[in-house]
Image 1 (cartoon, rainbow, N blue to C red):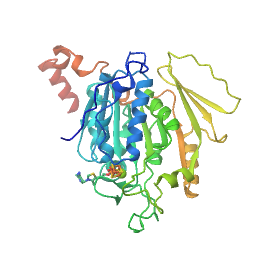
Image 2: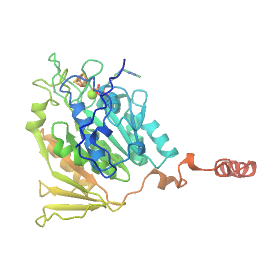
Image 3: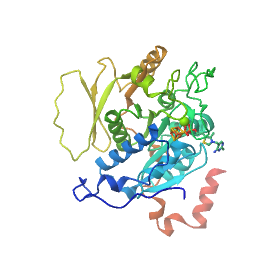
Image 4: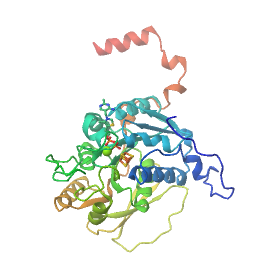
Length: 351
Ligand SMILES: Cc1ncc(C[n+]2csc(CCOP(=O)(O)OP(=O)(O)O)c2C)c(N)n1
Ligand code: SF4
Ligand SMILES: [Mg+2]
């Protein structure tokens, strides 16, 4: 058996969301990851975010590559669409699915090996093309599934469990996403659910390419002294710049903040992202500011977390390509097969 189903018993008083679903309706099979793995906390945050946003499970498509992180979609959203692709190829499959059916909410889940090594080219192009999706990398600095080799996000000078020192520069995927044009970029930590759940909610509501780098310690191979992806190291070097509140259009905006302590971003669908600034100097609406702030803090060994950058009113790949408004499976035969004359005209246009 490759997965274990959960018993269907529900407590009758479990809180329900606007659709009448409980949190249990957003869960998946029982996790077979190592006890304490950061990835399980990210799955819990995704479940919480989808439950709180009252997303209809059948309208979500979850896609992943290969790795412990890429196995996790089995453990959440058991009533949603799912596609487990080849190692590093999730972005192209997600792009194709999104182009065929723009009505679904796309959630790509990947690992640092999956996205920063074999899948780096795919990662770059899905960001620069502006695919409307939430892309989460569960970043532990190692290839967990194949027993703990350094991945391309491991910091130079960090130590493996057996004491080997990583001689290569690490890739910061959040910085890359910023440079490549993602319009919502955040960094979270699997050990900080209070920060992570709103980051995931904001990403799911965002109408463009949203990227989250979530530091997620691997307790089996990368949670020792000398690692820069251990629970202790991340807690000691975590520099949170803001705390996010996601206000959907259905909810009234009430909270008051002192001037200068809050940054508000209104999104395309009317929802509002409110950033309670923890660092007064941090401006999440400037891509250049985000790049310079994150890199200067990185040089001091600090891990900057929070919503690093967001653009309010953004377009996506469908807008750039001027595609049809309806998903392909809702088009009739006439639109899908307009006849020989239309094909001839189209071919002439390409000559
Ligand atoms: C084409 C191909 N090459 C190599 C592998 C072996 N492999 C499986 S998972 C993996 C790395 C996984 O690392 P990561 O994406 O960081 O996920 P983690 O297990 O750390 O969550 C590798 C190299 C593979 N499955 N397919
Ligand atoms: S090997 Fe590491 S990444 Fe994989 S399940 Fe265990 S703790 Fe998690
Ligand atoms: Mg990994």
